[in-house]
Length: 100
Image (cartoon, rainbow, N blue to C red; front, side, top):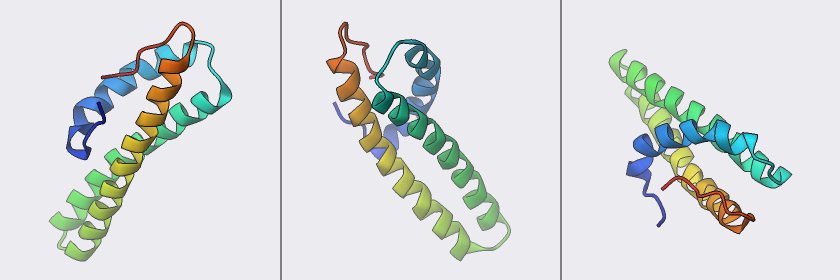
C-alpha cells in the first residue's frame, strides 16, 4: 500500500525507529543508500516545516510558501524512496518487512 503525502508524520516516526534495525542487518549497498537518503530527507523535511512556520510568523509569506512547497516536494520524494526500500526489503531472503 503506497503512502500518501499526508501520512508521513506517523510514517516518519515509525521509519526512524526502524532505521537502526534495518542498518544493522546485512543489506546491499543500494538499499543502504536509499535508507540514508530517506533519513536525510526526513531531517530536511522537518527543518523545512519549522522554517516555513518561522518565516510566516515573521511576515515573510513568500519565503514561507517557498519552504512549504519545497517540503511538499521532499515528501513526495520520500514516498517514492520508501516504495523502493519496500521493494528491496520484500526481495531479501529472508524478507525484512518494510514499515507499514
